[in-house]
Image (tube, rainbow, N blue to C red; front, side, top):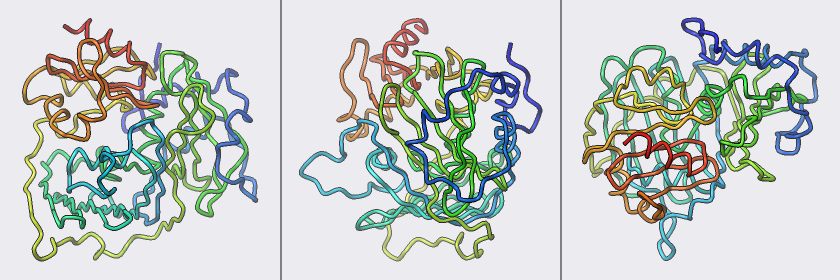
Amino acid sequence: MQRASTPGRRPWLGWLPAVAAPVVIAAGALVGSLPAGASNPLPAKTPAQVLELVASHKVDSLSGTIEQSADLGLPELPAAGKPSAPASAGSVASAIELLTGKHTARIYLDGKDNARVQVMDQLAERDIVRHGSDVWFYSSKDNTAAHLALPADTQDPSHSRDRQGEPGMHSPDELARQLLAKVDASTAVSVGPDVSVAGRAAYNLLIEPRTDATLVGKVAIAVDGENGLPLSVQVTARGAGGPAFVSRFTSLSLDAPDASVFSFTPPPGSTIKELPVPDKPHQPVPGHDPAAMDHHPDVSVTGTGWETVVGTPRGSASAAGQLLQDPLLAQAAVAVPGGRLLSTALLNVLITDDGRVFAGMVPAEKLQSAAAAAQ
């Protein structure tokens, strides 16, 4: 039985005794996909101690450069014949583009409500800026800006780390939290040889789901040996020889950025759109702690850990309608019995004919089974 988590701490800490048991993977299994080794060895820690280090980190001011590489099997979007360029600010297409190929971003954080992410494209730049309750999305490609006024409940510190990137461009910290939320008694965990990321010595936290009912084969998280901040995350699909998704710092400063970094004014001539506040501003996504679903009774959850499947209800205003209205997603989704499937190496999304969405890091047949059982 899973232990209850301590209030204010990561839920997966309840599994520390389980993952500390001698059911660990060989350290060499992931070494070939990890960052360069650290020259100065860190004090030895058990898997449980490294998990505790990650859970207790309090880094909330930094600046640095993140490189993200994704080889998920998605087609290169937009379609051939169009130049590769960033999509309009705040669009679903923007998120999909960031899940293909390689991207570089500058990230700035200062406290719980000041953040800036600058995604550097070949010929343009995309920005997401949060200052207090104001969030701006900007694309220099077409000089478009979108503004969102956050509701009061997003000022809660428990949501503060969700600000570290727009959908598709994840910081290592954000990605590590989502993956570690799936750690349970069926997960093998070990600590490999130390590594060096962005010039900082880090522990290798090596994770392997011990179930065939997930697309994830291996996860490697580089954990800062001084403060516990995840510096690099590499996710390898089951049966694959190399990582399908990598997010890592290439440079990092823990000094607070200058306050001017978080000030944003749309450039002259830009088109500005005001975004509506979602009815469910903290709608969970696959990878987050299922306990968070308690606040969203209209979202169904089946399975646990790595086999979790999240489903949304039918309706014209549901996520299904929004997804299929985007031409890039419509191009990538293929017809399957009962709907359309957006399939990647690590995540599958089923959009049913009756307007529901089921997603998880699981094979497509598990999504179809979940959809059938929820009718």
